[in-house]
Image (cartoon, rainbow over all chains, first blue to last red; front, top):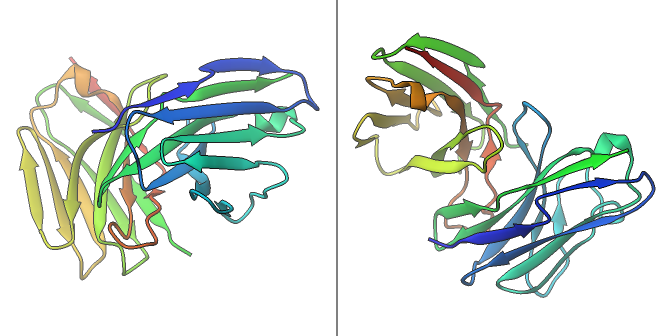
Length: 113
Length: 114
């Protein structure tokens, strides 16, 4: 199955700044997804990254706050913009491989101070 | 919208006992149901999955059952071991269709005591 490399693995950022998280897949994947996981909680879908078109955002998430790029079928980025302490979380990317498989990146632990 | 409910939120068992985690889903078009195990600080790892054309699937000590009529599916772990301790998530998806996102349950923290 596909392997996803995600970076950075962790970062501590000042409020008001932005952080871009990158995911690189070792093979082409049809869909890529970005999740947020608060400590001790489940994975909440932020958006679906489509190659060559705008991402599709879930309720409660907006493009201005979480711009996403997907220039090709093996790479995507998520930017967390104008960060506040409430954005402190783990961010995970996921790629859909084939008809049914989903694989995950190792996550980015973000702390906003 | 789509929703997946998962119970219990925590589960504590003695080593060797069985553990059962249950999930229900709301989207009747869901046809793919994976289970993930997440250890502290690690990414979710797929442990077993089932598609809607199958009622049960087993892989060694792990089994999943699906009742499409009732829209619920369950994870069964037999002969539990301390290394089974982790957080388990169920999820549902429309699978191979164009609307492919995974919706996760809230998670179950399983503790297996020696």
